[in-house]
Structure formats: structure tokens, C-alpha cells
Length: 187
Image (cartoon, rainbow, N blue to C red; front, side, top):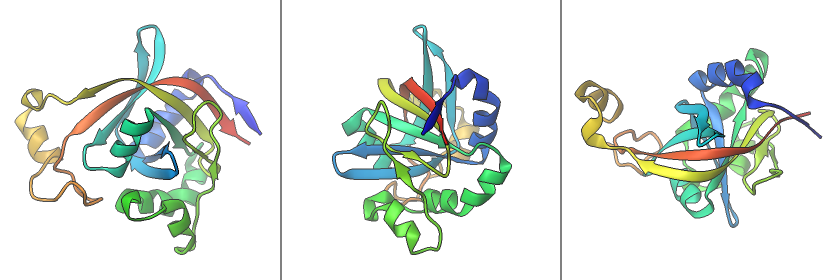
């Protein structure tokens, strides 16, 4: 069962949880992935609400979004629910879905997340992170590296780690403007 919400009413929760890491989920065919994100934006463009996700080129999630053109965002509702999922969020940020199914692999680590079918998209929601935003990609844009200040390049894009490594941070981002087509809390 879900409770429909207006994303605007939950902006403080979403943005405060984003700073500590939330999950972005994708599905393309039989491939499903979730990854930790801590960069993102919610705003209005073309008179529509968007969640803009910044996904590095080497990430498995990048491939799945390119194929499916959709994603969901899963957010803990408060600090208590964050404590319950902290290990899973850490796991999803340090491991690649390219190497296996994170949902299945986490069960062997003594914690797990429960994927729930999306309502308006095929990408899953996650029961343990109940605030869910469903998005369909309307627009994508590559970063213009020539416009990024040198100090940010040095801090956020150091060279030397292959981009297919889950801890890599040298490759650049695609900005995915996901029109928010549904938002709810899993009850």
C-alpha cells in the first residue's frame, strides 16, 4: 500500500537525506540495479517537476538509464530509518551491480533491501527507504568539462582510477533530467 505525496511537501527531508546518500534504482529488461547518490536536484523546468541525477559514465546505472530512460529515487524518511539502512546504503555505494545483483548479494551480508514494483515505471522502489520518486528521463546532458573550475576538477575528478571501479571518481557525469511522474510513501 502507498500514500501519494506532493514532492514539494517533502523537499527538506529529501535534500537533507541526499547529503548523506540515498538510493537511485534502475531496471532494463532483467537487469536491476541500485546505487548510492549524494548529488541531485529537484526543480521546475518546462513547467514540470524534475529530479536531476548526476551519473558518472563508468557506472552500471549509467548503462541501465541509457537503455530504460527511467529511474526511481528511494529516500529514508528520518534519521531513525536511515540508521536501519545505513549499511545497505554503504554497500550500494561501494559495490557495482555489474558484478552481480546487489539485492541478492546483500542478503549474504546480514542486511537486505526489498525491491517493490514501481507504479508508473518499471524501475523498483525499496520498501526500507519508503519515500519514493518515480522519474522518466525527458532530457540528458553531458557535463561541459571546460566550464568546471580547476579546483573542482582536482577535488571531484582526480585521475588515475578506472571508471568501471565502483570507487572510481575520475570520469564525468551525465545529467539526467527525470520528470517526476509519481511520488509516494510505501506503507
